[in-house]
Amino acid sequence: MNNLIKFIISIIICQSAGIFGSLFSFEAVPVWYSSLTKPDFAPPNWIFAPTWIILYFLMGMSLYLVWKNKIKSKDRKFFFIMFGIQLLLNTIWSFFFFGLKSPLLGLIDILFLDIFVIITMIYSRSILKLATIFLIPYLAWIIFATIINYKIVILN
Image 1 (tube, one colour):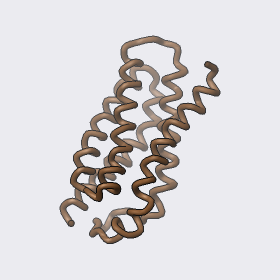
Image 2: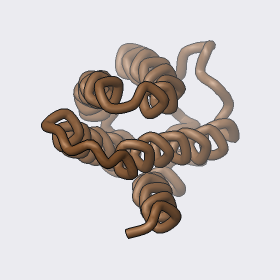
Image 3: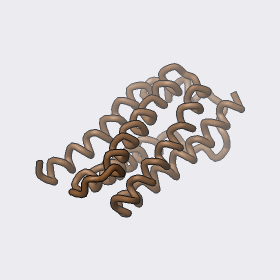
Image 4: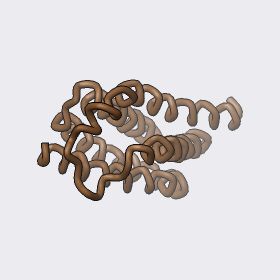
């Protein structure tokens, strides 16, 4: 498979997770989420969609860089497994938080997501440092989201 196809597939995989997650948030944000008490530092709702589009693209870049790397290793195999798990946890968070309207389940999920993103980054670093760099904004954003999620649980 050539690298252009790997690139396109990597981006589609990550953006698809975002699209799937948005199915749960689309209707919940204007009514349910807007009614929640949120911390003062929570960003406005309009910032989430463009931020996630960029983050899913960067995640796709990381996936692509590891995928196109020809070195066969256990770390590469574990990267793919951890990447898949964290992407699934990312998507499930939207279902828990917005679909089930459960900030508590969302918080539990996002704590695992934080851990699995860090593990994914550890494996990506052993393969290609640039793949890890592409995941740094994602990790920063989900840690920020974890704090917001925690505060929503406390405030509501």
